[in-house]
Structures are given as structure tokens and as C-alpha cells.
Length: 348
Image (cartoon, rainbow, N blue to C red; front, top):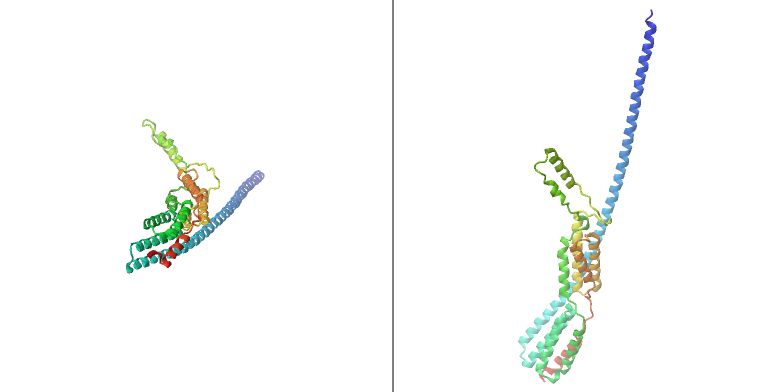
């Protein structure tokens, strides 16, 4: 009978201990649930941030692609216009060649004396000089042709040719006073730049030179402990895996390999368009294409590289070149030749 009161406190104590353990477990479960909920919320925040950053970069890439397409369309339009102008020039050259063939056939069909043949050659020389001046802007060739014609007229010593010689002398003086455009030299300089485009380093491709101590760290003494050599090799590998580089210009655009390829090709097209404008003596198009090429060179390529600096200097020098000059025409000389041909002064 005395054991019943003792068992009741023991049962109550056991129940209290169970309840305490259950409370601790419930508290730990609540803490774990809270931590899990916080991690889920933080992960969602990071995922949302990554989505926004990805959307922003995709928008930037799309804008750059649109700008590249617009530039490509403009270049194609410029090339098409240049092709049309070249077609016109080729037509004029074909017409000139047909005239030359017709003159040669006329020379074979007709029998002329020595003075007539000399006058015909002078007339042909003057026509060639006029065509060289109008189509190609070749002042030097036109000047040589006029001087040769004047020499032939001087040897003929015909009084009827005084008016023609006077017109030729005036045209020679005009050509000597005209400014000279070295079209061939400018074309060679542009071709050199086109060839060098593929070798110019982009600003985003520059990398810091590896430290000279890496090679030294790889060489270890033979008498070092094995564990020391092991950790030295691990440290060397880690230094080669991670490099820290300073970028002075924070606005350097990062280009994908395909975008870098199209950038170089578009730069070449700009330079080709400038060369077309040089051949057609279009000053505005010539300077506009060179200016665009210079802007792209400054923005996308490594400005510290010697080759890039040299290319920029060459572009700046080309932009100052005058390709569209007002050339004198040979209308007075050609009119004098036609007057002599119609009047039959060659036989007198």
C-alpha cells in the first residue's frame, strides 16, 4: 500500500520529460522550416535577378545586332551606288574603245599623206587626253598627251595649226596649275589598311602578360620535401587558372566571336567603299567612310597596340586628302581640232 503514492510522481515526471522533448523537437522543426523558407525566398530572389540580367543582356545583344544590320544595309547601298557609277564609267570606256577601233579602221581604209597621218595621230592623242582627264582624272597622262601633241605640231610647222597650238599651250598651263591627286598611292594605302584589319587586336581580347615568376615557381629544388613540391605545384596551377586584369576603359564592348568577325568584315567594307569613292572622286563619301572606319577602330580595337595606333594615324592622314578637285576641260583644244577637220585645213 505504501508504493502507490511513489509511482504517481514518477509517472508525472516521465510525462513532463516527454512533453519537454516534444517541445524541443517541435521548436527545432520550426527553426528548420524557417531556415528552409528563407533559403527558398533567397533563391527565388537570385533567380529573379538572374532573369532580369539575362533579359537586359539579350536586349543589348539585340540592339547591337540591329545596329550591325543597319550598318550592313547602308554599306550595301553605298556599294550598289558605287557599282552603278562604275558601270557608267565602264560604258564610257567601252565607248572610248569603240571610237578608237573606228578610228583605226578609218586609218586603214583611207590613204593619206604624211601630214594627214600626223594630224590624225595628234587628234587621237588629244581625244585620249580628254578621256583620261574626264573619266579617270589622270592629270599626268593628259599633260603628257598634250605635250606630245604640241611636239608633233611643232615638227609639222604648219601655219594653219597656230590656233590649235595656242589652245594646247593654254590647256598645258591649266593642267600644270591643277592640284595633283595621287589616286594610286591612296588606293595602295587603303589596301594596306584592309589587309591589316584581320590582325588588329580587339579591345576585349587584350590579356595581361603572364607573370615571369610562374616559370620560376615550376622549377623546384631536387632536395625539397615531397609535400612542399606538391603544394608548390598546386599553388602554381591555381595562379595560372585565375588572373586579375585592370581595364582602364570601362566602356569596352564585349563581342562574341561571330560579332567580332562581322565587325572586321564591315570595317573592310567601309574601307572598300572609301576606295570606290576615291576612284569616282566623291569627296563626301570618301571622308564619311574613312570617318566611320576611324570611329569603329577607336571604339572596338585596342588603342594601346602599335598596329592599331598606326592604322588610326593612316586613317587620319587619308581623311585630310583631297580627292575631288576641279579639273580643267580640253574643250578649246578639241574645238580647234574639229574646226581644222571640218575646214579641210590639213591638206593646205
